[in-house]
Amino acid sequence: MNWMWFHKLGSPKWFYELSGRWLPWLAWAAALLLGIGLVWSLAFAPADYQQGNSFRIIYIHVPAAMLAQSIYIMLAVAGVTGLVWKMKLADVALQAAAPIGAWMTVIALLTGAIWGKPTWGAWWVWDARLTSMLILLFLYFGVIALGQAIGNRDSAAKACAVLAIVGVINIPIIKYSVEWWNTLHQGATFSLIEKPAMPSSMWLPLLLMVLGFYCFFATVLLLRMRLEVLRREARSSWAQLEVARQVGSVL
Image (cartoon, rainbow, N blue to C red; front, side, top):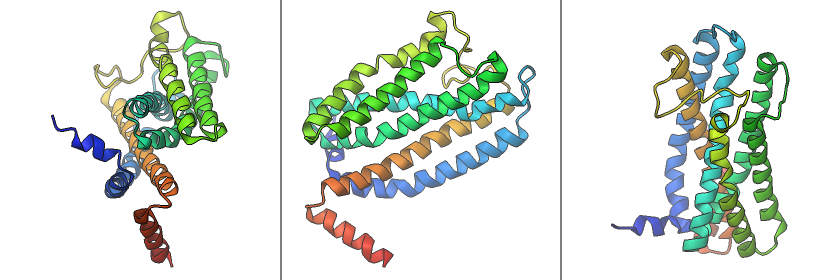
């Protein structure tokens, strides 16, 4: 098997050039999917027979919760890549993705509270799913804080990688908490591998929203990574030429 692509991906210059070609497509896909998904879910999807229109919060809550967990898994993968293969671009990805994951976790917790009030009669309960999601937010905060507190970049990268790898044990706890413990939180609303329990008029817009959230994440991640790559490679000739080109295009 040819692993040349894997090693090329670790090159900041090669990544910068490749990501520049991906960005427009990802941005347009995110805008299109989120636009159609929002209009469909809020205006045309039928109300739930039990929860009425309050159930529509799932079109934000579920994608945000799924993405928050997926991003942390990505942090762990980036951490392993950085520790094993010493790829500095892995640390760039980890540092760029952590704040996005934290925001997605906040959105999931807030929308969950809004959904929980009419459903459970309380904004917050110390449910296993909610508590493990709160722990996920603290893990994100820990990764961000470590990355900013340690002055030496290599030491900070190792510390963040270790925390990301250790903390990934929380992801299966989040996923299976409703099965392992007696919780108020309902089971999985949406799954990519199982037949949906909802009618197509309800789960198709949810699928569009999930895909839109992931495209949005990829767009923001690449933008943040490109900026960080330029900052770290500021002394290299190619980065200086790229900055000069962008400044010239603006002027």
